[in-house]
Length: 215
Image 1 (cartoon, one colour):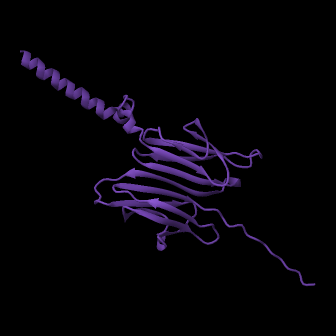
Image 2 (cartoon, rainbow, N blue to C red):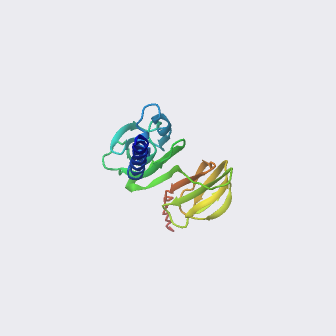
């Protein structure tokens, strides 16, 4: 009888644990356990605003001014808002970016905020990928300007978008460019078993209208 009760208790415990794992975000629960949570908050987010400073808010909470390095965020999806600091009110629009943080990786937002919502710079973050060979990673590149060209170490690859392009795990120089826009060059690191996501923003080159009058 005691053996039957023990088996029944073990069986019910397994069923309860299975239901818990299936319906609850276990990662979120584990990340709140002391001593263990340090492994779940082992992510780094760097935020840099080019040619100026910006106020940084993450999921509605203010974190300070750029340049900023944050290393205590758990992995997950975040909404980052940048507000360029300026003496002129309403000249620069607030900019919002969605980014996914993965533990044991460094994500980076490096953006110049111009007037009228014009941006120049990049967002980089990693997502894990399984079943890839050793020393192989992947790269995806998007751009706000269609038909922009992608170069890796000065070699033309294709036009955007570039999706899950396999590369050896090492450092590269990524360039995104198109006529009439300022080119963007980014040093990138491809890591084994990870997909590096890059979102590029290009500034249009100002057009000078020169007119000459014969006298």
